Image 1: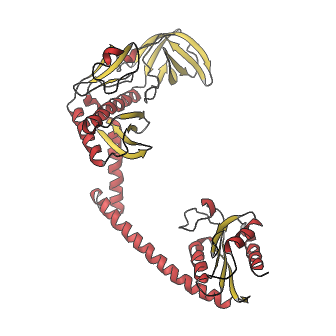
Image 2: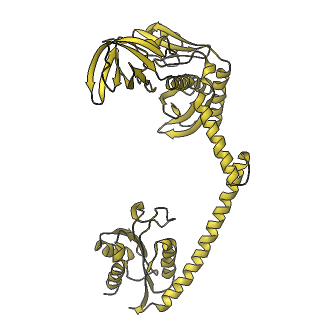
Length: 412
């Protein structure tokens, strides 16, 4: 089977008629093959088109070499069908894909950076550049060059040439195809072999905006948006900044400075709270030690705290251990949030009990060994150093029994 690909010569074709050449059962409907089709099948980083065939929704279009398979919910009733392309989706893809050609050429012209891959996503698109040292200045230079080409509204032409001839025409990336090759030419700026759908003039791309930059292996991934996506993105950014400014009692342009100020105030408040919590922990540790019985020449503090006292419990255990000849056997009830500051449950689980065992420096006791012996009896896990160990996973109703066992093991 051989499908005539109508989008090769006319990317703006929204409706067409075709003959059904074959129809085969598929897991979720039927695979329909036509003698001609305007549906673009997923290829080269660009997703496939959607629309209808004979009024039946097209779920996907698949490239099968010479043929295009149309996945539909059921077999069309007629041997001749009318196809209709989902135009908003198609035009969006045309804007993004042509924008990618312009942006990739701009990176190469402005900084000698070659594009090694392209992906057109549902919300944003990405290109991977062949360097892991791409800076903000290079991004902005390429972005401005690309948009100057958009504003000049240059012509975008579709050409067909033999592969050998195409490779002599200054392609941005030489093609390895044989036979006839489809080329996309952006007037005076770029020439690339490509089978995708594209706009007729660069002005139709709209704004090209780089959104995010990240390192991926030895490449730099640039996330970008074009056209209507850029409009929606800019609108969303403005609304988010305006709301942030309103919540911070300022305007959108003041939001970054206000956020920075509040972040510093928050850090200062956290430091003050931690300092106060440390002092309170020392007072509580002294109080608990004053009532702790003396066993084998040392005082043992055995205490269970509520889940809300997780940080305080850890501080108290350390505070007890600062005193001479002292041991803290501390447990905290089940934590309902995994974001419990720096004293998380083992392995980051957010609904586990926690145990802290600590002792004064020196002596023969080993808190790590003691903790492992204790939690193993109750299905928990944990470990640490000789003077401090942390664990968890003990059922809440078994905490008192676990601490009693630990004290017994400590004082055989």
